Length: 310
Image (tube, rainbow, N blue to C red; front, side):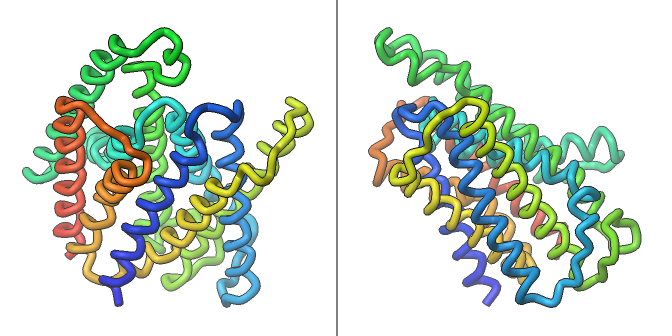
């Protein structure tokens, strides 16, 4: 079953990326990134409440505050990622965002005194090279865009959004290790060996729900913007796929992580394929080369992680 859950997670997150991009295309909605965040927060919050009602978790609400630093890194990274989708092709933004594992490796190297194995070190180098190449290719591409299209494509500058996502997500993952590495040292309250990962996930989802309410108040009350509900369909579908993928991820990684990790880490391949098929995205040869470099590095990191956990 773990293999089925791995395939489901990979496909669901790839599909989520596709609908995130569809919901952000054209820049018609000024606050589309916040609206996407609201939708995801509402769906995740609903899933968390469902778990609290029907699953015997034994949840202590204080864990929302305890886990807040990690939750905020993840939520901020996602909202920034949604903003970046306004200006970059999904084929570019998704691989860059999924490079956060390289930053996690560097953080562990600097702050935890850990050493990198040869495979991980090679992956970090390849990913870094690929991102630099992407930045250069976007700069070259921006010179070919007509002035009327400049507001929708900001060239190399637009790459800052998935890079910020990458850093914030890496920080969340780095601190997540502190919370979930060992039941004996976790700051989470009233947890057991069997439920502390579930408690962390529920805390994250409930925090996202609170953030969704705050963003909703900001749009409706502070900015006095109207929300056109019929136009939020793509965002809702993306949120459902995102939440479903998060659910199956736990079961996928509980199996053979040595295979599951690289498969899930490379879900951006699914995103890129779907973008080419359904969004008709076309990249230049230099961009394709850069994306291949980044994806190859992500797969290598996934393999290294799987081998470490095997």
